[in-house]
Length: 74
Image 1 (cartoon, rainbow, N blue to C red):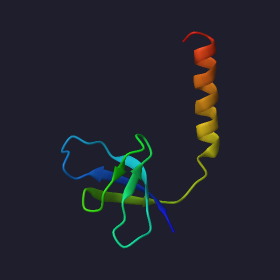
Image 2: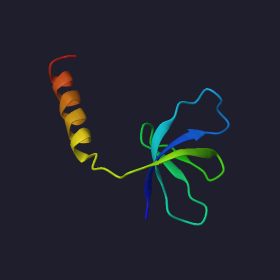
Image 3: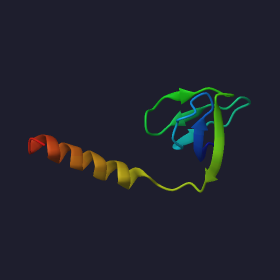
């Protein structure tokens, strides 16, 4: 089962902690939720495993706001 995690890229000393999805496999990679980039096994450090929650509503609200801003010229 995939897990929601907070992670940090190891080779970037200035990297912020990010939310990601940790894939369930022998050498799991992480999909960064802020950029969509896949971070390969061995290139990240798991800071915390987070209880899964439904982010669908957050995504919908962000999309609606972006659509409204583009319609309003913002």
